[in-house]
Amino acid sequence: MFRALRGRNYRLWAFADLISVTGSWMQLIGLNWVVLERTGSATSVGLSVLLGALPSVLLGPWAGSLADRLPVRRVILVCQVLHAVLAALLALVVWRHAPMALVFALTCASGLVSVFDVPALGRFGGQVVAREDLGNAVALGSVLSSTGRILGMSGAAVLAAALGSPALFLVNSVSFLAVVAAVLAVRRDELHPLGRGPADRAGVAAGLRYVLGSGRLLVLFALGFALSGLGRNYQVTMAAMSPDATAYGLLSTVFAVGTVLGGLAAAARRTLTVRLLLVVACGTSLLQAVAGIVPGALGFALVLLPIAAGAVVIDTTMSTRVQLDTAEAMRGRLLAVNSSVGAAAGAVGAPLLGWLCERVGAPETLVLAGTVTLLVSLAAASVLIAPPERRTALAHRVLRRLPRHPSPPPGYPGHPAGHPPGPVRPGRAPRKRAHVRV
Image (tube, rainbow, N blue to C red; front, side):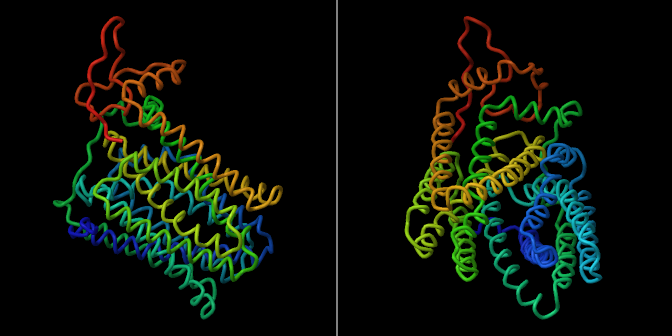
């Protein structure tokens, strides 16, 4: 279950990640509280979240292209230092009771830095472990993220009561130094370098052509968008299903515990396949519909636990397959696209779910959203579990109006999954392709 921890480099990386995630959750709790306290508006809190996520939606592929072209260690070091400075400035702004416009500006700036930080962190994380341990490392990262979330949320309540909200931002500022120290301390000779493509395949356009040329990736990203937008925005539905603040706190704790269990379950598996992703996606969608039917907050909490666990398994499997089933030279761009899809799904799904909860009721919204994600999951399964020849034919039918792009040059590391390296001549049987496990 913990085989990725055998490597010294990953142990350093994992410990730094836990510290950084804990600090980030402290800042998130502090930021939401400051905005709500000063404005008295939940809409302002939503605006703060939107400002932090908007750069990822707009600039994600470009940032991923830079992660594939530039030395990721330098990108990470620069971004972590900028994060530390911005968090310290946010502490000063909050302490001095500066106008809320400055708080929103710093939030947007932090989101802008994260756009470049996330794909670089993902690419570097793929170098500190061997390829066969990447799935385990991603799963353990989910466990660490959930643990940091629990520690950050509980620690924020204690620290804010004792020292005030600015202390939360200062702690987060210091936490970024742990990542800087880890990057500087890893042994370069024990890293697992990733392949790089030729110069004409290093831009944003090449990355987008790679995604558009892969029916498999398009289906995975579409599935991820639906699951994240309608099946994962439980900040909205948990609040709508809670009769009071105590119940909301209980549901939040249950959800956090479920994410830890899901991360451990994913880490225990030797391989994380697309078949597992589809099964869990269908199961969590069905449970979401059931969550709208069971009576009482306690019944909802019991169903919420496996849903939270399943959400982590889905995210972990999605990230693992995006990295392992595609060209190494494209990894930064694909991680950025995956992050942009998640950010866009949150930006669209959260307001939509909130509007539905107000219009038709929270239970009915859960049933409706669960039904939709179940249908999307079944549709994705009908495509992804089909033979490779059928997937390729479907991709060509869907993308037949897109402009053709030249085949990758000899030696280019990999072709888009589900897309042949060149056109098949009429009258000839297609060449046999290596079987891709799904």
